[in-house]
Length: 52
Image (cartoon, rainbow, N blue to C red):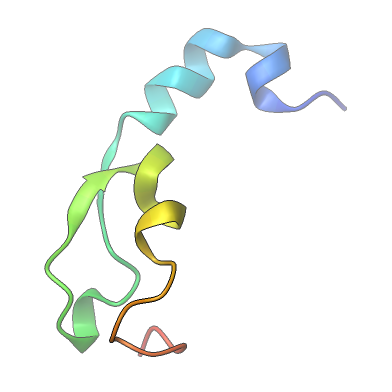
């Protein structure tokens, strides 16, 4: 199957714009932003390697 971006770019862009909290929100991280930026946010910060 095709990647979503290739199969339906309008839907992929809409999903990427959804606002989400950091996976480490429960550990104290207050970041929130577009889903498309969430992976870049999580690289190398003080909340460790476990989103618990």
